[in-house]
Length: 108
Image 1 (spheres, rainbow, N blue to C red):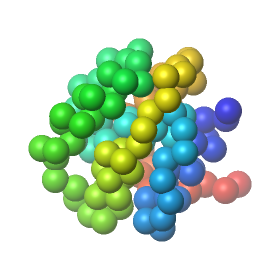
Image 2: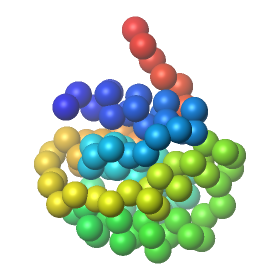
Image 3: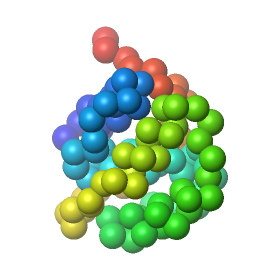
């Protein structure tokens, strides 16, 4: 899995406000974005079930800044995480937390 594919997929879904998260790769990137937007502290190597629990607890107290953020939070709330975990998920979490070009899709 190329990390840019998961990144672009999540951003497109939020921009269009369509679809759902389709796997743990997208889940981890989206979680990183939510952590950035809400100031949520997340350890880098958190497992899927623990990440879902943390987000469920913390996102309820976070107010989205716009419709895209609201859609991101809703996708995370609705997602049923798988148990698989690998190093790319950690990388995607970090990419989301460090995102500089929020909502911009690069197709070059």
